[in-house]
Length: 157
Image 1 (tube, rainbow, N blue to C red):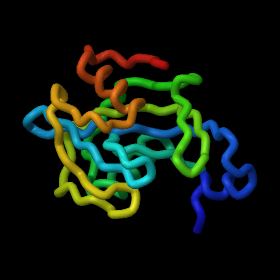
Image 2 (tube, helix red, strand yellow):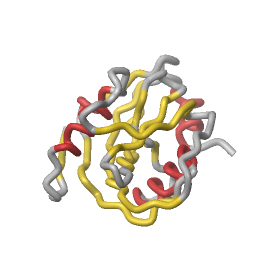
Image 3 (spheres, one colour):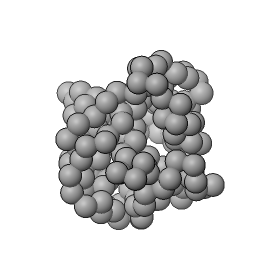
Image 4 (cartoon, helix red, strand yellow):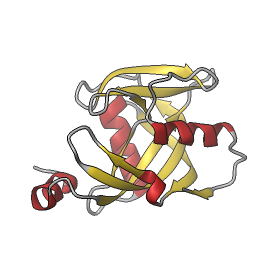
């Protein structure tokens, strides 16, 4: 069965889609964050994805993290909401999106990180002060916000 975005793409082609979604900052006991090498853009990025019809942001977080990392989220803290034209991205296949993303911090999870081989080709924990250069720019900004996070939920662009 096709997901919501695939169904829309059949109708509108590569034109801009406004997509609600989530980003997951998954940390380990050493203060590192889990990144995946994304197969769509060839860059490191946070586990993330778009909401399906009928799904809450939290349900999307659980599903996307499980799909992309094989981890089960036990607890998630909402950190920020990203929206606005600065959240626009064009993918190598020509598709345009503008994100409306809730970012969650996931400190409690269970399982062993395993790459899905579809959306990601590698998973690795990185220290926040030594992130890879080839990082999705929107996610770089999200990780900078995480480094400065004071426990308050923020509305960001």
